Each structure stands twice: as C-alpha cells, then as structure tokens.
Image (cartoon, rainbow, N blue to C red; front, side, top):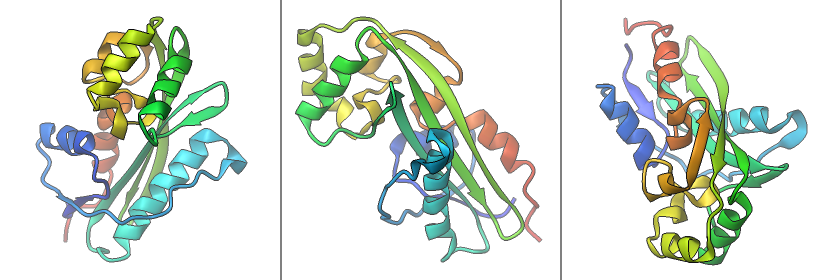
Length: 188
C-alpha cells in the first residue's frame, strides 16, 4: 500500500489505526469546521471529512489520506465538542435517558481513488443525575469529544445500549476503513 496519512489530531483515531498494525503518519490542517446541511447530516459529515482529507492531500499527493469527523445528533440538534464545562453539562443533561445518533464521516483519498462514507450508531443513555454530570465534567474527559462523552473512557458508565458500530462512537469505524483501504492500489 502507498504511504498512509491520518488527517486528524484525534488520539482515539490514532490508537485505532495503531491497534490494527498500520504504519502511518499524522498531518492535519486547521480548517473551518462547518456542516453544510443541504443534503442532511450524513452527507454533511462526509463532506467535512473530505475537506479535512483534501487539505492534507493537496501537499501529499503520493499518499493515501484518511480524513474523519464525528458528530452527535439528538432531535435535529448537532453536538460537537463542548465549548466549555457549562456546554458539556448542557449536552449531558440533554442526552440523559435518551437515544442519540453518533454519525461518523470518513474520506479516503489517493490520486487513483476517492471513497467517502458515513456510519450511524444509535446510543442510548441511562438517566444521569446532576452529581454524576458534575463529577464527569470535573474529570475533563468530555472536553474534547463530540457530545461531551467518551464511550471508551468514564463515559461508558452512561451507556445503556448501543446499536451499530462501537468504534464509530470511539472515533473511526475501523473495520470499514480497513476494508476500503484494501481496494486502493498498491504502491508502484
């Protein structure tokens, strides 16, 4: 396979790729994160993942570049990363006792091929008390995560059930990514 680049600073995405034994480098560009909702949430997240990948690919055209983005959605509201502790608490209160969607968008680019896809996972939370929310936010874990929780960390305590790809909730639907990578041409 051609050299691989992950166009993301996410430690969770990095860890998932490392666990699969892939050799890759990390290069990310700061781009404005906006969702173009014209075609719905899934297409909007795919487009954002593609923008992230394209920004890196422009400088690394001999590589395969993986871009990704994850959002949490509930009743049409999109939950990105919390702005501050109050925002994290607000999100957790809204998610408490409810089922929400985690939508991951992925784009894989090379000179020969482009693949974009999205993955939707349904996550149901137990009701969460105010004391639990405060304790969790004090841990700082929710501050860099869409929806203000990490299912692979302390946030797992809130999860009642999940339908779909667990690793999508962590940050990257890794099995689908690996299957798509197999379709990319080998280095010449």
